[in-house]
Length: 330
Image (cartoon, rainbow, N blue to C red):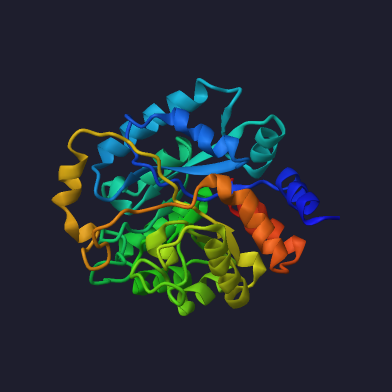
């Protein structure tokens, strides 16, 4: 079988999984842009509906708007809650969707909010978004570690069947979370610090600890986190292969964090007024660029040409996250 035939076989036979979208979570977002993922052959996408800088009410409003839009287009999109529903959506040519939240501020300090979001389609919640919150520490803050409220959140997420996600989270908190829980933990969109020293990337110790839980690290496609100001598929493959070598092929996935522009009145002011979320030494002036969903096909080819086994490539492109969804989601 030729490389091209193997590529097509993988794209046809596996659920191509993107563990996190990066566009601004706001009811104003033009979700017609989700065709970017559909046209690229992506089968599943976790859509961000809120992060710690925004009030929890905004997260609820965004969830309501996004759910309404998706449910009104059943021939193109499917709001799913299980691995089997993802497979059914792929068979029907629909993009399968769930939601995620970046940080625990959306809970408003109330543990019952976890179940509320679960029933609205949220299947992964990050512990923090760069800064500390009631559950734990952020990666650009003085890390306070996992709190008592954070332990309650883990227990509730595990009871319901949700991905506990420690992307954007401080080192101490990530290690505390992975020691406390008895279920797999994910970094939905994080890269190895060994290849790019950005403070939002993760150390080898975090990667190994994630693998020990049975979890997955999703490679993120931003130039700031890939290093060398690159977003090409060869650079993505560098990070994938580093993680394969360190954590093992069953613990690597893709979470591109791809963003299309969302025009929101006043958002520039909000960002400018909150530099603590994006410290200037970590986010210097200059354009943020993204690896696009359309690169998924090329990434498969690059990995195969580099000699990665077909089974490994299948697992990285979606098989690993599908396995975890079968294990965790209820």
